Amino acid sequence: TLGVDNVHTYTITDNDAAPNVTISASSPIDEAASTSTVTATLDAISGLDVTVNLTYSEGTATLTDDYTVTTSQIIVPAGSLSANVTGITAVQDLLDEADETVFVDIASIINGTDNSTQQTITITDDDAAPNVTISASSPIDEAAGTSTVTATLDAISGLPVTVNLTYSEGT
Image (cartoon, rainbow, N blue to C red; front, side, top):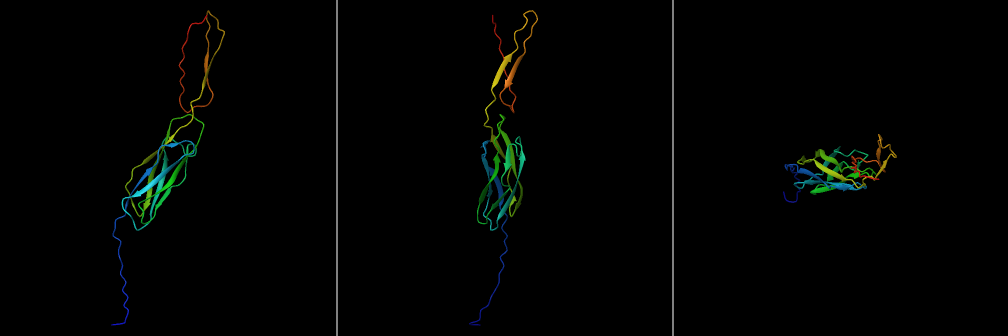
């Protein structure tokens, strides 16, 4: 009828597949309190927020001694293709050691599908090797004496320290 408003309600069913999610992490980072950025990327824009829960595991780095976890969740807002967070912060120490690693994985996703591989963050050591001083016991008896040679480090090292000695004739 003319002049009568008719209201009709329609429901649109969302039949779009959830987006595939991948993560990436900035690496390497310096030991001197540097941070690593973890990015979640979608393969398609979603009409829903996508929540990515992360898990960090020790490679050769130790939690609290070598790094701290800053954030373990990334939310990619509806309508966006990616978002990032600061994942870990390296902890400065004074120990000369090898570069160390931390692994990042997706623990779970809300409104998305895991299509990622484990990421490795390398923490680059910035500490100098310790200095070595050498001392030898003397004098010794020419007929049957022995001398002890001692190598002393001026700092503890997290790596093996090898000292090669050469001997030469004296007087």
